[in-house]
Length: 539
Image (cartoon, rainbow, N blue to C red; front, side):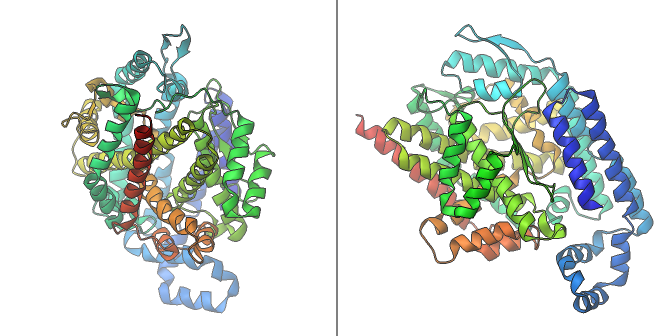
């Protein structure tokens, strides 16, 4: 039933993603949500019954019946959560409230993707642009500085108009997390969220600690960016344009070829499967009106194949996004083919390792084939921005999440204006505003309202931990360490067959220690060293 429902739910959600303005797809998605809630309610008796049997009796059953062995880890997950599981009546009640779960995120998605009247602005080229999320992502990189400011002013100005409403939708999500944490007898929302996959809170704390300790490296990057852009003072709208101007276009066919070539170190079978996906319409590539913004992969159609949604723009960033999302897709493919359905689905804690690892392979390949220093600078600059965005930016989001969830856990109210102030303080500290590194207009502090991931509590920190882990994995594989490639691919094939922190640790990386974060920072500094060496040659 779970497998059939996951396939049906994926179908309905991807139809809605393709056209968020289509009433029929919205209705279909809502029907799937209702059925999912009914399925959860109907099966809610199972966990209490398993807990009633107890750990010892379950262990005897598994030892006696070979067909139960595939349920070893799922059963262990249930049994270890005994202190946080209610009786049958309580679990049934919680399941019924599943119909109300995620209402804030659903309202946010429809409001920002279909209902908000996005502004149309005129760029210095004379082009008129309807500034929705997809267009913002593209035009915030405009080479003209005034255009970048115009884009950011208009985009965040629109969010500022809806600050109160979006504050209510996010506060709704925060309250939901706080209530369920209390119902499940957790001390706070972060412990509740992380314990779903038995990730130690020490991992989250280490991430924030190491990120703050290494903010000087981030500030070094911003100063280097200001130098390369030729601006006397970095401003927030100077963060996204490529460090090297390039007219190189990367049509979809070119991007596919670059990604295929880059994945060669992962073996012929990996590359052949990727090629099959490219040529078999597993991907919805191009932007269009009412299409869900951004990019994602959906891999829960166990008996079919993974699906990738993109908004491809013919630039190098789109190529790296493709490598990222297809890293997810190949992870799902490998796990679905190596694991039974019950242990195939993997948590995000591991998922982002696969995607960022493939991004690093892409970078290595394009650098190897770059013909000029300017081309190398394009790729190196993109890699730096990727490290900033995936590590430092996501860690910043995680710190914001920790603060706002803690406020609601304490029973404090949070309106849109208060969320903006909390975000503003963190945003300016990370960007060195007090030290004069990056000047940030207060109008941009409503950026929290632009981030959909906050509706999935304590999700984004895993981008940062994952890119730190993949940095260490790529080092091991790149230097030909014995067994490193096999251990990495085995990690992907493992799916959800064990707890993610333990799987990653077994594969060679311990994310509760400083080592992976220090490795990532060292890599970032090495890239900046190479860029500065190229700049020195030009003097």
